[in-house]
Length: 62
Image 1 (cartoon, rainbow, N blue to C red):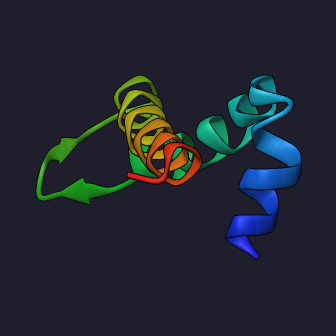
Image 2: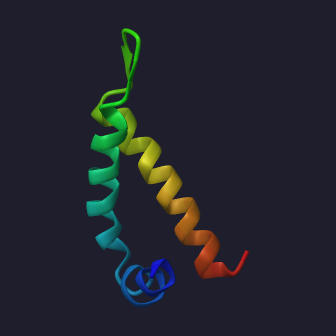
């Protein structure tokens, strides 16, 4: 399923990755450890880095 999304959806239209990045970023941002929370901005940055890395590694074959 992930290969289908990467090959047929995200490779021809990479701007669609914005929506999953924001969704996962808000979820990551809600994680709390004691009194420390990442926040939505940090969560979106982390999610963007992770999704960009996984998307690029599958599309280039590395």
